Amino acid sequence: MTESYPPDLSRRSLVKTLGVGAAVGIAGCSGDGGGGTAGTGGGESTDGGSGETTTLTVASWGEGLEREIVTGILNDYEESTDGVKVKYQNTPNEQFYQNLQTQFAGGKEPDVFYMIADEAPQFMRNGALLGVGSELKDAEEYNFDDILDNLLEPFTYEGTVYGIPKDFTPVGLFYNTDHLETAGVSAPTTWSELRSALEAIGESTDVDFPMAVGSQPRNTLIQLIWQNGGNVLSEDGSEAVVGSQEAVEAMQFLNGLVEDDLAGIYGDDIEATWAPPAMGDGSISMAMTGAWSVSTLEQDYGDIYEATEVGMPTPEGGEKVTISFTTAWSASAKTNAPGASVDLIKALTNKEGMWEWASTGTALPSRQSLLDRDFYNDRPLLSGLGDLGDASRPMVFGPKTSTILDTIMNEAEAVLTGNKDPETAMTAAERQINEQL
Image (tube, rainbow, N blue to C red; front, side, top):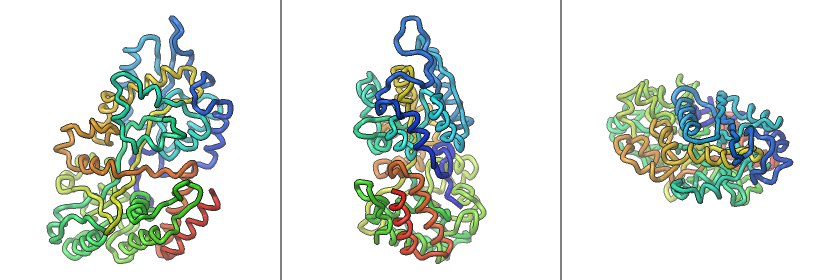
């Protein structure tokens, strides 16, 4: 069972996206690398014509509160902006990028749309996205510098910013402090302390397993590799290095927890398939998860929520780093209304627009000034995740990100299910990725 992704921050459980580059390439082949030339996008008129009405098509996923907030901002923008109408498209997250690819291939893509970090490299390199950074950097009362640099990075290509992150969540280690107290141990700050704490919890409480991971540990493995000094790709991105000793040691550490029954597998050893119900029903004490789990813990498992804190243990001498998930608002390079598209992205990602969504507590704002608000003082889980923001990195490894992650996770699953040893699996992942690169 793959570890659960944030339901409103990701479009799917990272299914393979073979064919994306081709579809995007069709859309971008006549473009100028994202310069915003008017063309075949959804905008129905060009910017600035006297008396003309510009219609912008906007696409996102998300139901319930997320959809309500997005449509509310769009309605407010339409009412306050002369000569602009907005058409909204909502697509289920698991279908969103397949639908977007089809729209790009047919020249019918929306003007403004969600762009998840791991999809962005393919769209940017094929010239399918509009550069938005230069205008927003100079926009009055926008404060571009307030946006976290590490979240802009996956939406930046050759010095041009092609998307503004609307929110993010780092992944941290959620742990039940009542269980730690029962076991007589402190919150772990190192790998060795984590293992010792799990051992003590297993001996002192009635949990099924002290911790849970997915058989494809997307929320867990990559940050362990980074923390231990390893990487997925070389610095220039030309070759895989996930077979390094540092990466093997990270896989060994995680596998050791599973082999010694200190961590169980979601949906197999543990009935629950994600962190909140597994922690909430007392099956486990700890899990790697993010902001998407907070509201469920708070609403459905209040006592556990009150007892839960978040941190991120690292190996002795290692780097404090974790993974993060982020989604941006981007625009088509072929929109007929580039100015209006950028202006709408400004409204969606300025302090007011961003706070409309972030204040729900489902994700964290990508602006430092919003992270610093008193709102987080009495929300320790969100505050703790926010403290990991500067130490977080999106899992983006170029245009083949999805394939690379799938390869690593397939090999990790072989290890965690007892079919391969860590060194053989990580070496195999490195070889397969290099063949794909």
